[in-house]
Amino acid sequence: MRRSCINLWIVVALFVPVLLSLRSRRGETQTQTTPSSSSASFSDSSSFSVKLANTFQFNQRIRDGSNLEYDFYKDTCPQAEGIVRSALTRIYFDHRDVAPALLRLFFHDCFIQGCDASLLLDENDGNSNSSVEKQAVPNQTLRGFDKIDLIKEEVEQACPGVVSCADIVSLAARDSVLLAGGPFYPVLTGRRDNHQSFFEEATDQIPRPDDNVTRTLHLFNLRGFNARETVSLLGGHNIGKIGCDFIQQRLYNFQDTRQPDPSIPPDFLRQMRLNCPNNSNTNNNKDEFMTSKPMSSVFHSKSGMSYMQALSSSVSSGSTFDTHYYQSLLRGRGLLFADQQLMAEDKTAKLVSAYASDDGSTFRMDFARVMLKMSNLDVLTGLQGQVRLNCSRPVTS
Image (cartoon, rainbow, N blue to C red; front, top):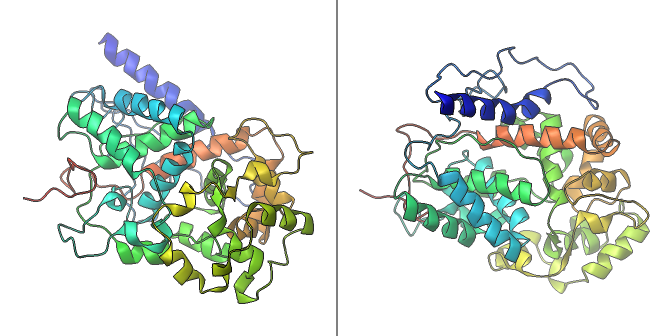
């Protein structure tokens, strides 16, 4: 009974910041639908299952994570989350760039068919000859797969065949954000792993660095994210370095003109070109160029820029996980064309301005809320899917 009371207080403490962020805040230009007043239900006192169906509104086709639970593994592997946290912390202090890598890996997994660890597969439903998500052009620069494998091995040693790779990815992403100075948010667990990988969907539907704002908003809207949530999620770009291969087309051959993007301020163009000198390959077709690059080569390279670098030296910035991404966009100093495009539409520009104009608390609250929503996107639960023993291979009968 005492443990139940303690657990209840833990749940309440974790969710108070997220629930507070559901209020209408600065930057809103239109009235939004108000969630049900019963936004979090603790009806099952034995398991404290947290029901989110009334908290966040999703497209009807999306499984909203309402079957996930707080502390799902409390009986079967109570040390699971602690193992993930401690293993990632050790990795982080040796490799600080693991935080943005795992955040990006989490996003690319969840964005295609939901948070089901399908991105981690090396074969599709047992067919080693079929293309997998890892091979899709937008995913060829991802890294961190080996770190997920290391964490999975430690979890398997403690609790064989219990904790899914999908849960490990979601927990590792949350802990990465926290280690990088970002906000804490609760991660519900109980996800199952997909036995399939979705190469075509990953090729076509992952947002691209050269997307305009219309396509970016459309892709996120298909997954139940409104403009505010989209602008908040893109703020995750404020940690890590963006490789030069994602920038060079904009600097030297924008839209096949053999000229730079005319919207880049001249002083910033000079700064970007110093960091990313011309590569003769940028005159080639950009899809062929990106396809020719070895997997993860962009982020293993030291060349590139961060949004902290993008800010003028006269602009002060606090922690690495703050509003400098939005401040950069306000000054026309977005590194990616898709990022700077947020200033091209009134509703997104107002949100950028709102995030940039306060002490960062609004962005952090919104980011925590939308990361919780993203982690519940289209998940497999119960008897759906499987629990892989090795994250790169499906379980075969």
